[in-house]
Length: 192
Image (cartoon, rainbow, N blue to C red; front, side, top):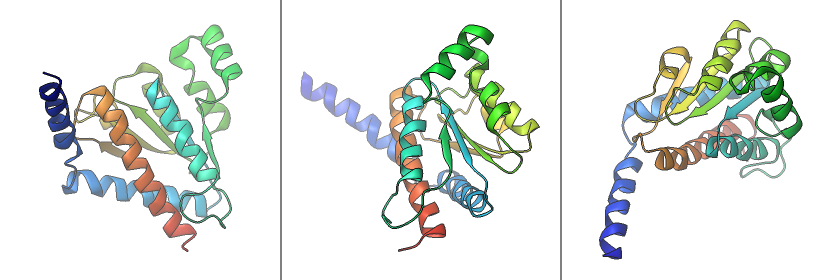
């Protein structure tokens, strides 16, 4: 029985990873180019997400500030809006969790900065509000969602879907995408 369960789960994974079509790689390439351009012009990247997506935002921030393959390069300015527990708890307590990322975007974002927002459903209220604030501040917005995209797909400058709406698979695929995108950015800015 376990073999059957594993085989079924593995088939779902294989189907979800099938992201070879243009609808998947063109937005990822567009994201890499606009983010690299922002870094090259002295702008920064803000990142946000809930739950596992919060970890994704923090994880890729480490790679931007540290390195992907080029250990000799300078870091790129990236801030995970998910990482400061004092800010998160204070904003949640004082303004409600819906405002936790929007307030940080207002405080830290500047025109021509970039916001990467992660939401498996594409409908997380705090992510929607953050993207709206980023647009008001004339920032570029990139959203990573499941296949459906929810409300976020209509708001973003770049929408990067994955080939599933299953939350766990979507989060895993977001990691794959962002590593590929970050490596492309590093090749653009700091080639080996």
